[in-house]
Structures are given as structure tokens and as C-alpha cells.
Amino acid sequence: MSLQYVVLATSIALVAIGVYGLTSSNNLVRQLLSIEVLFNGVVLLVAAIASANPGMLTLLLVILVSVVSGEVIIVMALVISMYRASRTLSSDVLEERGV
Image (cartoon, rainbow, N blue to C red; front, side):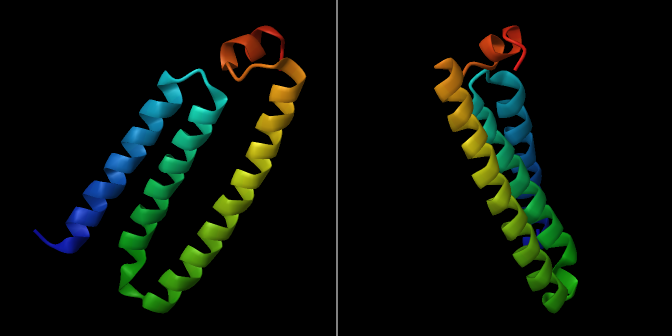
């Protein structure tokens, strides 16, 4: 079994863990962490597929890491502001309030 298959299996496992965590949790912070695990699985999958061209792989990974880092900052700012407004991080309570 080659290293590429191990990386593909690991990335698929990360995507599955992220989807499970996203669908099973009501806490916004846990959902955010699950989305990050999902994104990391996708990044690992893209890296495994694009590993034939190292220059393109480096550029692609730098772009992906930059986008995901920006997304984390924006989402955490939104979560903090929602917590300050409603004093809860349960997505069920926020849905009831129309947020």
C-alpha cells in the first residue's frame, strides 16, 4: 500500500469526522471545529491529488491555508458577538430567536 493511498484514506476519514461533528452538535464552537476538520481533510485530499507537480502544490496549499485562516478569524468574531448578544452558543436557541 503506497503512501498516496494512506493520505487519501486519512483525508476521507477527516472529512467524515468533520461532517459527523457538524451534523451531531448543537454548539457553535464545536460546529466551527468540525468545519475546520472538514476543511483540513479537503486540503489534504487536494494535496494528495496535486502532488504530481510540487510547485503547483505549494502555491495551492499557501492559498488554501490563507483562506481557511481568514475564515476562522471571521467566524470566531461572529461567534463571540453572537454569544455576547444571546449568552448562549446552542444553535437550537439561536434558531428559535431567528438568528
